[in-house]
Image: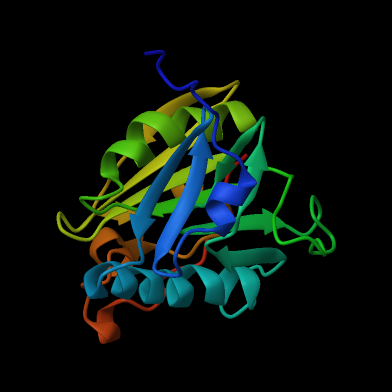
Length: 200
């Protein structure tokens, strides 16, 4: 008996997923994972305050960015859904009317979990680099770490510190501690501590 023909996943496969699953298509294969657990969700909240405030809202920061949770991004045939992503207004003056983005973000942050860690590192990271994403963060709430990658000519160089400084992470980002971005820092110690112009 003949084996059933393999079929690449398509957008309809994503649309038919239950509400509690997030779907992505990578190399024609459907990847799904559950909505975030509380620890993962707490890291979302920390990022919203520490990154969204300065960059999207212009609070103690430069403004001029769109910072969006779980945007759907279509890149070179893949459909990727990072946990958080950001676009500079100068590259994306107006948000699209569609439910997805076709322009690669300037910044992507993935919050690692047991269900997503392998996909985030081995499948999505190289696609972000090839697609033109300049800054990639990997936040691990369990290890309480932040890894920062900057892509240059489609190569990624890793930088990781207890304190992530402006030019390492994002232009004009106030200095913050990695544990704050992973959702564990005490609120009184996790506000922006210094605002410095990034070096070219």
